[in-house]
Amino acid sequence: MQAIKAVVQDGSVVLDDPLPPKGRYEAVLVLLDPDPWEPILKDTRARPDLAKASQAALEEHLAGKTTAIHPDAMP
Image 1 (tube, helix red, strand yellow):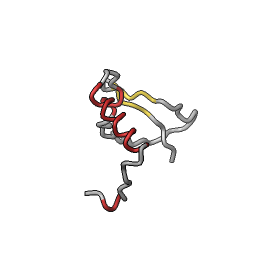
Image 2 (cartoon, rainbow, N blue to C red):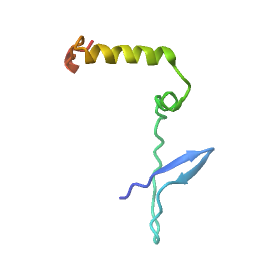
Image 3 (cartoon, rainbow, N blue to C red):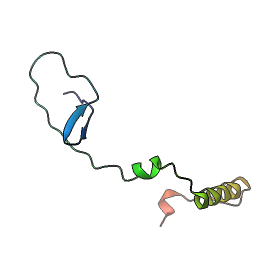
């Protein structure tokens, strides 16, 4: 078995990897759910409130005013 990366674009399968050169192969196409974070991460618009909050959080951390939360203790 070999995994070949592809995308479905406008109803057509577009292969990212080359196919084996000879022979007949059976394939199963599994459609993955879209990544819900992708549009957010690709959005290049300025977010001044987010930048301000991120900077404030970083400054608190660097000043030693924060404590780590163990993943098992998270709500």
